[in-house]
Amino acid sequence: MRWRALLMLAVLVVAFREPVSARDKPNILLILTDDHRWDALSRRGHPFLKTPNLDRLAEEGVDFENAFVTTSLCSPSRASILTGLYAHNHGVVDNYHPVRDDLVFFPELLQKAGYETAFVGKWHMGDTDEKQRGFDHWVSFKGQGVYWPFEEGLKVKGRYVPQANRSGFNVNGKRVPQQGYITDEITDYAMEWLEPRIDAEHDGEKDRKPWFLYVSHKAVHADFLPPNRHAFKYDGEPFARPVTWAEKPGSFRDVPRWVMNQRNSRHGVEFAYYMDLDLEDYYKRYCETLLAVDESVGKLVDAMDGKGTLANTLVLYLGDNGFLFGEHGLIDKRCAYEESIRIPMLARWPKGIRSGAVVGDLVANIDVGPTLLSAAGVEVPEFMDG
Image (cartoon, rainbow, N blue to C red):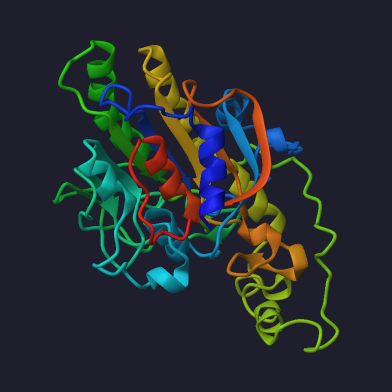
């Protein structure tokens, strides 16, 4: 609904009484992570996870405490972010469908408004990593990608974690092998594109354009694999089973049949990924894998801060969906339980956001495109649901 986008805009934007000039248009850094549930932040009172760079975004900006996705699955959620549409309107209803050619991505509208645009990371809509409309610069990989391009670190406590797709990156049409850990490599590609633009702004180049950079991480998608520097960091930390772990619907009258079917599948705690999964270890690896994402955010923000260009950059961070770790007897996502659909959403923009703001109103992933367009002074299309 348009009111949610207006709510986000009211929080994010200092009202523009005049048309936004090219020099006043904010740079925009959109950071998306995979499977990042809303409470996996140290600022949420997590017992051991430390996310200082994500916490900084909220402390110096705004924390949307009640942010949700409209469809709790990777590809449908990503399509909703780009189009501002519900899944039944954009048609990406699973992890295999590409986005229709007739749909408009909000970066296309930023391009037309004079923005230089770039995409770095996980696309995951259809089995493609080909350059997509709306982006001048392109770095991506097929499908889920892999944490490692080789067999390093794949055996965690005796459990083999396969790395199925090793096709490397598509860098503006050129195939480039993956060299190392995926989160670090995505960050390096993003920095490679970002640094010249930071320098241009710092040096006051007259012909520079405002920029939009979309950094889309593979992490923290299952199966979780942290970099070696973080492996086993949380081994000794406690894991408390959620109170709803043992919930068992009494009959099909209590819940929809698909809930019972999911409980009795590889996504139920009794048969977790066909019974070879230690859920306590799995959760700790999830937290360890998130640490590199937090470092990535810090590296990007610090690069701008060091050159004095952060003040007019709108940084927006969110997850594509949540993840269940035993709540309601389930693991994974795909359902409408809160743990599956609630996400972190943090934003920082010194010129447009009061630091330390906390918003409890409902916002959603379909509001991202309309809000960023409005912040850039671009008219929001009427067809967008957000």
